[in-house]
Amino acid sequence: MSLRSLDCSGTFIHFRSSKLPSSSQHPTKNKKKRYNLDNCNIFLSVASAFFFPDQASRHNPLFNCVSRQLSVAATMSSFFIENKNVGNKAESEDWRIRGYNPLTPPDLLQHEIAQTAKSKQTVIEGREEAVAIVNGTDEKQRLLVIIGPCSIHDPKAALEYCDLLLQAKEKHKDELLIVMRSYLEKPRTTVGWKGLINDPDIDNSFKINKGLRLSRQLFVDLTDKGMPIASEMLDTISPQFLADLLSVGAVGARTTESQLHRELASGLSFPVGFKNGTDGSLGVSIDAIGAVRHPHHFLSVTKPGVVAIVGTVGNEDCFTILRGGTRGTNYDAKSIAEAKAALEKAGLPQRLMVDCSHGNSLKNHKNQPKVAADLAGQIAGGEAGIMGVMIESNINEGNQKVPKEGKEGLKYGVSITDACIHWDDTVAVLDQLADAIKQRREVLGRNGQA
Image 1: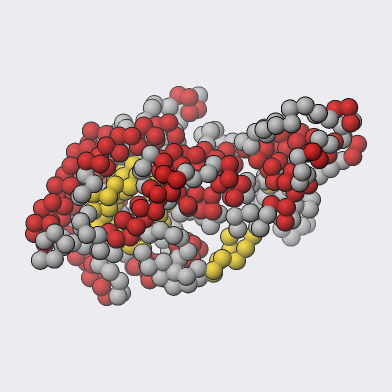
Image 2: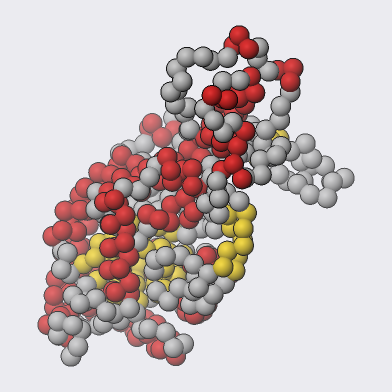
């Protein structure tokens, strides 16, 4: 569907003829002018494609008016469409809606920030290798390691971390499939910063169009370097902007039980891990894996941004992630055995990933290496059910609160969400896990067979 077929009739644009500029104000030079597509200005491209299909027709009063109005809207903290009925209980809807801002269509952003050939190769190879490990068919019987910052707030630091991780990826390529944790959205137990997409400037300005643009550029840059990436799935809209760049997905403990997230995962083009519930219960994760193997229908948008009913074929490449919970940790050998038994009873593959953070670290990042060491011991002893681990790591350890001066006052390479282990500990943990895989091969044989 072309952009011109979109129904833009009055949805975002209101024209007043009295405010149209005179013909003397028309731009007649610089026909190759490139319009800035940041933030709400990106909607200008959509509007112009619809109302002004040829380049010459854009030199008219209406186009200039649209341009100025959209530019003003892009810099305002208020909404492009203010809801006049907010708080008006005489109306039957939108009591609590302040307003609306235009959203960049997915295909426009994908066009502006295109995937490179190297990026696409990285993504597809990462998916194929991850699927093989998840399903136990990887010839090298490697371990899938999803490792990286709790969340990304600084693309520059993320790229530097990627460069470090690429060295480890190459070093351990025969034992570990390293995938960089690249989380852009954060589900919150209460309230707080919701991630790079939602609030890229970390100042409650919620420039979501800017966040999507920064995020897509970062994902293209990471994968173009040769690093496959993983991210969490939080809604049914943002994957249309970013899913072509992911090799692995995850659904968090707070949303594993959500029907909507299960429906979404059933249509994703990569393996998806479902964490156990926040209380530590495994049943919700197992139920989710069973559900996503079947076709579903749900509401989302098409690439041009049109609301649509999406039909899926099901996703058989999903797995459980043990992350502990309020009931305690679940990474020990007994918990692994119980989880495998529960999966077998449900008729699902006995393949598990273990999160070294969150409940399993008792929310203390310094415990992550201890959890990894325990898992390494189980793996070295021949435990084949542990097919992956997840670790929260950053350039520097710990975490920090956003200071009064905003992101300019943040320490470089330090998380602003959950605390992470630093790079030196990361290197040691990866070395230990790689050695454990070598030992498991000796116990089970090269192909995992005793």
